[in-house]
Image (tube, rainbow, N blue to C red; front, side, top):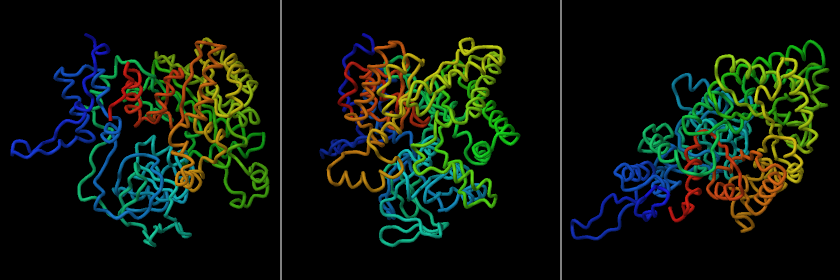
Length: 561
């Protein structure tokens, strides 16, 4: 009998291996369920002994225990909680407090594990985020800059403090009871619960996503089971390589703006404020060179797998300095003109690409050059150009025409290079026009972060701090829609998008790349409505694959906790 047709063993008895009982001594005590890595290893052992088929083993692995096994954890029961916020990237880390990106970099260079605390993060803080063992930001939520970067790196992070404040000098963190933490104070950050503790746990951290043996077994049992495909959100060849090792079937989202974080921010800033002329031409050449190199590495790493590259989608304020920071009247005038009251709904995504077409051309040229170079090296690049923040199908046509012109100038065509075009469905209008979009693109990618914000009319960075916690306390909402996909509202929009797009083009590829996509209820829902793939940060790929496979089983993987 095959794995898929065998009746499933009682999952509770499989997952909850007995650590020990008192029966040998005449005393009956309940069995102690294994947790984290031990729980998953117990299932793996029964699978290795032939007691479980692959489908049974997948149904028996508790997703919560797998997540514990793949993220560092510690016993914090003896520590004092100082501040609480929202856990936006799971895991636990310990280290000394620092209050600037520069201090985090210096601490790492000295062999220390810094915990970076900021009022909020910006693209300039990337070197500090890379150096930090954990990140805490007073403001923000699930989709804030530091949270996205931390999840991609597999680092614990807490955002949107509900009882903590970074004081005005930005060098102290005050907790609810008036406790003040200063640079060098050792803390433990639990990014799963959103808690910052004073001190270090008595026992060392356990777990982590680098357990090759456990991941190898998981990959083996998942290999032939049905379920949604899982891709990786990757902004570098390194992140893509990790995702591929963890079983991702491609890159579902490469965010071009993330390639200009940190020191590279100045390159994009130069282009955004330059007037037509030599300054803009030189700036665009620098942008093109950076992207050509990055895309070449990315396509080579993902040889033979799809890579979706999203055109620049930064709210401009993230890459522009404050007008007050410059003494040049001309620059100050430009910055004042570009400043927006609501940049998240302003000139971003394809809107920026249309108003500054030379910037779109530079990105497309880099993509085409990289594809040609990777093909010459004997590899098989499979690029998809994603158009973000679409509101009207005509915007996609503008980008397609630019792609056609760039390819023609290079003596080729998008068809010859197998470059496909996809539209991001993030605005309600794009969702309502999904059928018309499907007539003009090869794929749709539902960006549930922006889609959730716009369907709910909420600020992605502010709602999780005060409004949604108050609503939870009042019983008006059960979960933050940025943490768990809103199946009633946003889910209804997704269902309509899939229905309308497939009615026009049954073979159109449809994926979801929002932060909620790898959560259990979202995976079940997205599989039911007919989405082809989900995409998430590399450290969450194994969990997403498990959830997808469980929901693909005849039983739906139900009953396993």
